[in-house]
Image 1: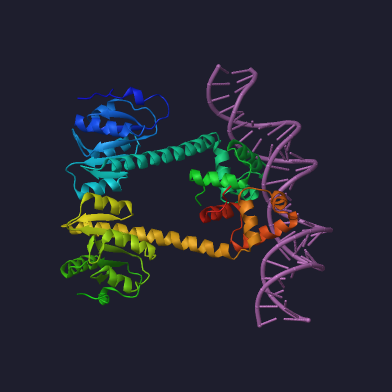
Image 2: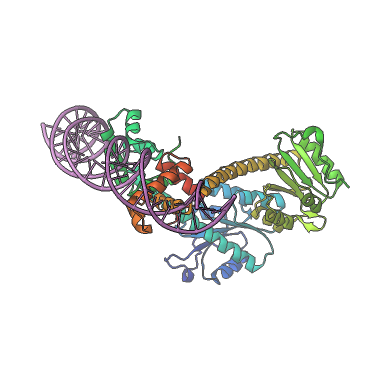
Length: 218
Length: 218
DNA sequence: CCGAGGCCTAAACCGAGGTATGAGCCGGCC
DNA sequence: GGCCGGCTCATACCTCGGTTTAGGCCTCGG
């Protein structure tokens, strides 16, 4: 059985090439998919079971998963849920030889990119993988933006966050002051600090960042 | 065959009771579903074919569609696409006796709420219908909010919209003035009109409304 | 103990936001 | 023609936002 370290080196440089992780208990299927995926210039990583994948630590690359729904020891659908708990958020393309409709519907509801019945056309798999990678790219981009925002927000002191909340809610400095029992001038100071730390120069931008952070519930 | 006017009156008052529209060419299936849906207190409307549904004009109620994928004259999936063009945005629950996985995946990708293989358990159908209605309720709520915003936005004159765009982009009045070749005081007037017509009293609220409207691309 | 950092405040000043009053120009419509 | 509405501008006045300078209080940790 192909072990965890079955990455094909030649097409897996440490660059930012998208990585397609293939999990199937049939070595022939793995190799076939490996060839297919690498034919469009993507890196691959092969596993014979979910356990092998979990023991290995995946590089943090843009990519996706190709899973057979019938896997050794666990259902592909349960594995899908398990991966989410492990913080592995790679988009998943399912394939199956003996699947049924409820299975496919459940997978799609749980966020799978596609669900292909074997035998599938090569092009269908490539389309699915391409879509999955694009989805992952988007997710990472969104995630990075949110992380950056949160990093800025976390440099704020408790008071500054409190003031920021009221400011983006549309209150005037004097109202904020009255609300939390401060002098207006102090609110101005905090407000200025917020603008500087959040890296914005207009209230409009601050409001947008606050929205993206999910603040300003009032 | 049951005609377009087969609505069961007793459980279909003109109130805001959610409406479940059932399309199936088998009268027995329609009646069975009708009983099931009405058992949980929802109104129903039965059709034997997509054509009948399209000829009829549906009341504008919260609700959903239950479609067989195998319909007279057209595939349920094609009908799904066709309905979207007709502006009928009701969430769809598919059911099928002879469906396959690609069909279910295509339906789910196209936004179906669920895809049930016959025979299905009554409870599964009720769960799907409940979820579909909830989705429709949410969609209508979002849509109504956006329509209200657009109505306000449309009361703005071209100049006012132009000024609004720059203001929510975070520019100062004098910058806006320089950018579109006006005096600062005129910008202030327009800005004041924008605030009044858009029904907001703080810049923060204006920015949020602009975001919801998809303005402020810069 | 003392420095650092968070927190609060004040006085003073300036730039920006907002409104009212008044007025002129132009194009479309009855 | 006359009216209306959109658009423009000016003066004046007031409020609000924002920064600087300067100071005091507290707590935590070296």
